[in-house]
Amino acid sequence: MLRLPNGDGSWKVRVIPNKFGALAREVPPARAIHRSRRTIQGFGVHHVIVETPDHSQSMALLSDSHVADVLRIYQTRYDELTLDPDRPYHNLQESQDRCGDEP
Image (cartoon, rainbow, N blue to C red; front, side, top):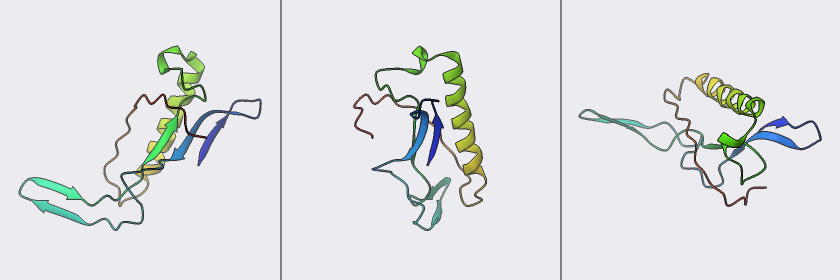
């Protein structure tokens, strides 16, 4: 989907679809309001931003320039998502998954 090259042919940061995403673009955005609670059926996108190919690294151990690249990728994805008027809510979050089974 989106890759930031590392200069040696590999990638430095990338964005991939979540294999087991909780949301789907194909689901029509069926909204409901019940009292003060608003809901929407699982409509949206669920992507993974892989911050480094080294799954043993954490953001705190990355160089300043690498962290800046990661934050630019987050900003780019956020900006792209806000262009769709059917998606009024956006949530970016970080999780630590060290399994390293993504290609």
